[in-house]
Length: 323
Ligand code: TXA
Ligand code: MG
Figure 1: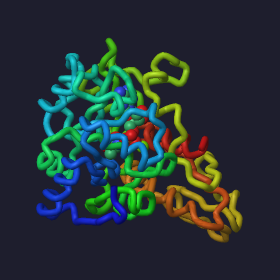
Figure 2 (figure 1 turned 120 degrees about the vertical axis):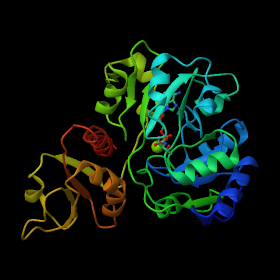
Figure 3 (figure 1 turned 180 degrees about the vertical axis):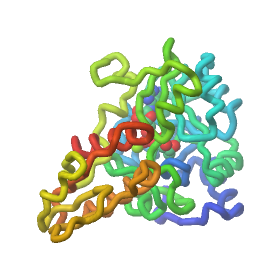
């Protein structure tokens, strides 16, 4: 649709109103959420949603998350809302996506033909303002080209989608930095399909028992098509090592991500990551983009502890290494 991408400030009410109009006319708007930037289109307009897939180069069998401003809007997209879903909705707005039985109003292209629909209420004030002004549910995957790290700044979005998206709302860096946690609430026990910005510990505290999708569970894997696709893949090779092991692996074409300081005499780039996992998550995708620079052949990443947000961080690092 657009020859040129406009960048508007996300805290400007006039910009929000105009961006909402672009969405209502079937256009594409990239907007900040608390997790990562999303590439939005009217979720109930099949033509508009097709443009998302084209802009990202996204495989048509990978369903989108539908963003809404209020729980009533989420209920209207679902055939039924199981009790666990009602409970988990109390954690909205936030980095949590619920997979619900799909109502007939949601077009096939949005859910990639699945009988379920993924829904969330984002916590970013600009995202909420846009959703309210637009008045429609907005389908939005992460606003990166397929296979690139998710964007956590407007600059990242522009680097991937300039000229392809109509408008980018610039809300500065995302606070969480990792995508939402995706939970299937259509089963007897809720199941995490994708670790994300809301920890397993927080989910269990809210709803009790929660399963975690295992790579061995083929039936469940087939219901989360996103997991089959290549993800978070920098151009350089990513190698995961234990904490403390990167120091010995220096070289001209090497870049390291570590929570420790650069050792004296180390050859190559050394990106010191925040020690706390919240800070690490926030910096992760930007660091991967930055280190994936010309001349860097290998990015060596020291593993993080798999507790709290560490599970989602470790998941993204593993996928980057598999890329
Ligand atoms: O934080 C986020 O979730 C961001 C922001 C923009 O909200 N969005 C995001 O979207 O990460 P995306 O498309 O990059 O990831 C969506 C994930 C994929 O793994 C997809 O397979 C899964 O959600 N998903 C979507 N609909 C589903 C469904 N009906 N059943 C199972 N998984 C679904
Ligand atoms: Mg994505």
